[in-house]
Amino acid sequence: MNFLRGIIIMLFAMVSSFHSYSKNGNSANESLWKHYFMPSVGIELITFRDLATSPLFYDGVGLAGNIAWQWEHPKNETNLALYGTSSTTTSRTPLSTFFQTSTSSSFLSGSVYVHSLFTLPSLSNDKRTVQLGGAMANTWNIRSNPSLFNNGFGMESFANLFLSGKGIYDISRKHSVVQDFVLFTRTLQPAKRNISLQLNIGLLNLNYRPGYAYNADVALDGSNTDPLAFLLDGHVWKINGYRLGTQLDYTKYIPNGNGHRWSYIWDIAQAPGRFEPFEMVTHRIQYTLLIQTK
Image (cartoon, rainbow, N blue to C red):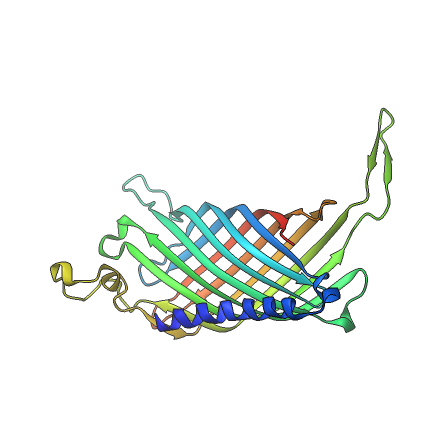
């Protein structure tokens, strides 16, 4: 718990420092800041396997949502986001006429994420912006598979420090465009648009995983037994594994400063823990509203 408390303190310290920086600037500098509130919904494809309980891969489709806050400046960008996903997954098993081979597992996941990126002037121009910085994420998974009996409940956490890079390319339409379709014409008005690609590479990868067996080996003493301690018995933090993530965005703004965004988000993580690894990959299609708050 002390580790988690430290992660949360570091997340808010990063965001607070950049927020303070924006407040302490002169009026000309403050006018360059843009603050957005960004709610999102999405559909996520999930694949995972936990070799501590089964070598089978589980696949499923889930509903995802998140809320985020973003502070943008020509020199840097800071983002704080809370993610959540709910899904039912099914095992990848061969069909059989003799017995039931397929099993299902419910899957819940939640994340806290923050990044701070700085513009590289030497690689940027009027059409292209290149940013480099760091990101942090903490993700918790909760899984339930009744077919595994005593090992049916699974929980793990990833805490990662990333090297993060982002490229933004301006594809704005500067002038009105008239399209002639013979039977009718269509006029496209000027529009501010961009596409961006972000890459996060895990530099420090921690995971909270159980021991060799999931079965808890703690005494049950009525109301004196802490249910959470019982479920997490044998879980410890380890530094190993890897995590990578990419995000491809198409963003279009409207004249009042708000906008909307379509994103493809890919994330892969591998957490060996002490003995048997947990592996997961997700693909998300996400729609986001950008609501300018200042």
